[in-house]
Length: 110
Image (cartoon, rainbow, N blue to C red; front, top):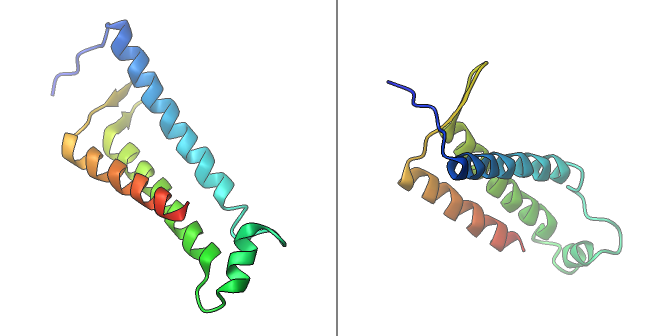
């Protein structure tokens, strides 16, 4: 496969924006690991108390983990890094399905 350097500034800017979205998803996933248990007196803790047979906070956490995992999977599918370059490739259907599932899971958690 021949690799063609990108010189279009707009395409470079969009590629950089995509990479920044991937970085933000990693930050969100890392922050989630610190909030598995809701704080005492929070709305989410109160929801857990009102519904003892269903772990509302755990369900919300798991849905957010699904959302961030979909974005991580999309990054692994699209980004190939080497010492001197980063190559982005996208399959329209694969990326679409992962983004759709990520949004659906995040919305379910909210």
